Length: 102
Image 1 (cartoon, rainbow, N blue to C red):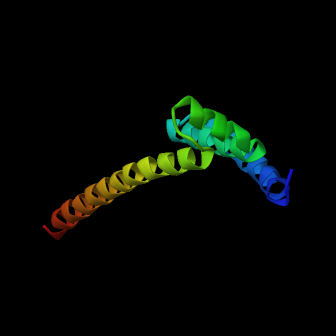
Image 2 (image 1 turned 90 degrees about the vertical axis):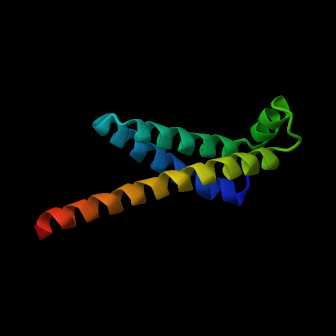
């Protein structure tokens, strides 16, 4: 294990434990998704060769490329979701302001 792994794995264990505790309290799907993402990060940091094995399984040469491709697909989806939430919030604020103005 290298220095990065020695530093990041304990941090990720704490993050995963905190997310699991919140998931047990809330039982919200978003908490479960966040927990799975943090666990995946911990697994890929603990065993970088697993990223390469998974990449070759789906027809990509390197694990780094797989992580990059997934990031490039997930980022626009998250941005679109956040934009739509902001748009709806603005509409709600306008409706509330109109109602209160009357």
